[in-house]
Image 1: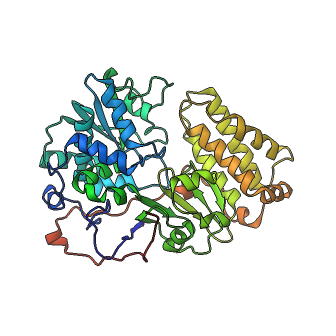
Image 2: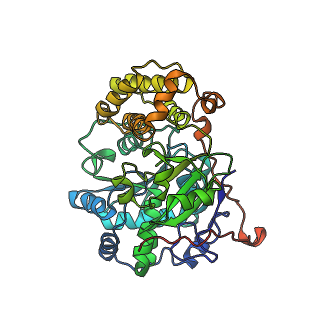
Image 3: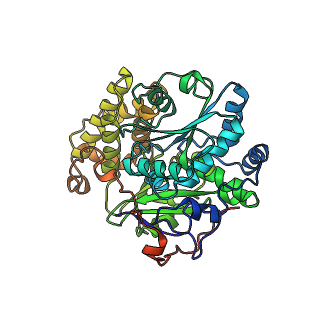
Length: 438
C-alpha cells in the first residue's frame, strides 16, 4: 500500500498535502485554511501566478499564467476543465487529491474560471471514488460556476488534452491532430483551459496565500516507487537531490531511475545527484513529468525496467495512428528481445534509429515516450545493452515479463470517508529536513 510522508512535522498553510491527507476534507475544514476566501482579485491572482513562475503539474510543465492568458484573450465564452485522469501507472497524486481534497481542486477551478472569464466548468476523471467525492463536494458547497463531472475509461492517453475535449463533447477519449489546440477551439468549440488538478490546487493556494506564492510554485507532489519498498506519496521543494528521494523511499543504493512516469526515460546512479528541478532535469536529458519516479533497486537490470515501460505503452496505444501502432510494437519487441537474451546484433541500431525518427509523429506523446525510453536505455547503459546480445542476464531472467501495467502500477493511498471527530488525529511522520533551492 502506498504511504504518505509529510514534508514537515507541522502542517504548512501552503501545502497541497494539507493537515490530514488520510481524511476527506470537508468544505468547513477547507474554509478554515483560508479556502474559498474572496481576498484575491482575478487580475491580481494572474499577476501572482506569473511572478511565481508556476508551471503545470500534468507533465508538460507549461507556464500556468501563459495558459490562462491564452484562453482569456481568445474571448467568447471559455470553458475550464479540471483534468484528473491520471494515465501514468506510477503516479497516484491526482487521484489522491480528488479523493482527499476535492474542495481545493474545485476552488482552483472556480478561480481559473474567474481569470479566464469561463462560463462553465468540468471535472474530468476515471476514478469512481474520486468522482463520488467531487460530486459530494459540489453538493456540499455548490459553486456559482456550473460544474459537471465527466467520467471516462482509464487509459494512458485519456488525459491528453485533446482527448479530454473529445470525450467531454461526447466522443471517445482519443487524441486528435493539432492544431487547433483546446485554448483555440475546445469543448463545444469554445476556448478551453484543460488544467491538471494539482495545478488547480496550487492556483487556489496562491489565491489564499499570495505572500507564499514562490514556495507554492516551487514545491510539488511526487510518487516514489521501485524495488521492495512500499510506494510513497509526498510533497517536496524543488532542488532536493534525487538521491535523497531514493532514501525517503527506502532505496538509498538505487542503481538509477525511470523518470517522469514513462516520459523522462532512464537515468543511472550518477544522475541521482541531480536536483528535482524541471530545468536541471531537462538540461540533463530527462524530465520531471508528472512527478512519478520509479527507482531501480540495486541488483535489478535497467533492461527489465525499459521492457516494462515500452510493453505498457505498446498495450496502451490508441491504435488510431499507424506509425504509433507499428512503432511502439517494434520498440516493444526489440527491448523484450534484449531482456530475453534473444536479440540479434542489429537490434541496438534499430532502436537507435527509432529513438530518433519516431518522436513527434503521433497524435499524442505515447509514441514519443516509447521511443524516448529506448533511446535513454541506449545512451545511459550502452555496455549493458551490448551484454544482452549474448543471452539473458540473471536479473532479467529472474524478472519474468510483466503484462499490462504489471510492476509499474502504484495503488492510491487510503483516504478515510469519516469525519476527524470520529477518526481522531493521527501521528504525523515527517520526512527528514528536505532543503531545496529558493
